Image 1: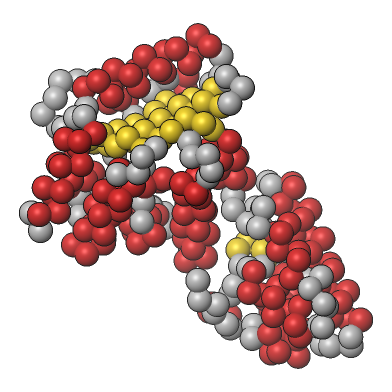
Image 2 (image 1 turned 135 degrees about the vertical axis):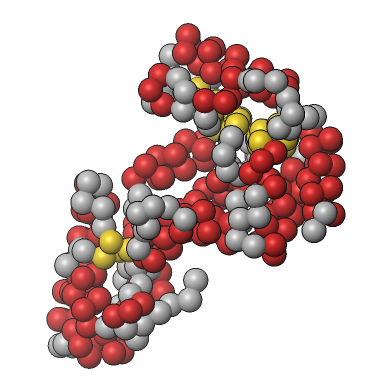
Length: 285
């Protein structure tokens, strides 16, 4: 991501005041930056000019009000001749740079050995291209600030590191036909999204299914369903239409979710037919 300078393009994200751990980490890093800058006798304005950012941003980062990006810490390390100590703070910062809820979801997905997702209105986040994700997030009302959009897109894409795990988890997705036909972001963005679905759907550890619109009613009409299973035999799941949308882990509740998800998979097109369907959509453009 390109580093921007000045008041109109501040780097980093605002700190979520409800994220106690995140607030503590960013406050500590900011305090260390300020102490190091003052130790070398450099004013905030001069430091900002040296690293290529505005003075106001320097004060926000040092005051623990702004989450710095890696480029900021790398530049600060070089300017302050910190010998890698400031740059190393990125290891702590990167763990809290995304919203708390997204971090918790990402942590669960990163540890799951099996992930099952049914998505009814959009293409699942684990399958979205950066361009597609940005268009969806920017469509929210009331709109998010550009800064928040950047943060949310980055957080969504960070979850896709699940594909890089070794050993790879088992992933299965069921997507409705209607969102696949919606040309979100225009023809080129839409085509790239369909191509991405084909790329992921052909991975050995991934099963991708399409639910045609001309099928009978099924249990997913109430909304999204996600099931995650772990190495120790435990599991967690969530469904928009069950248990007030709360995550559940009790065996009885999980059985209900598994029954619904299994029924949805049985009604959807098989994997091979689903990929052929997506290829057909691509050919129609």
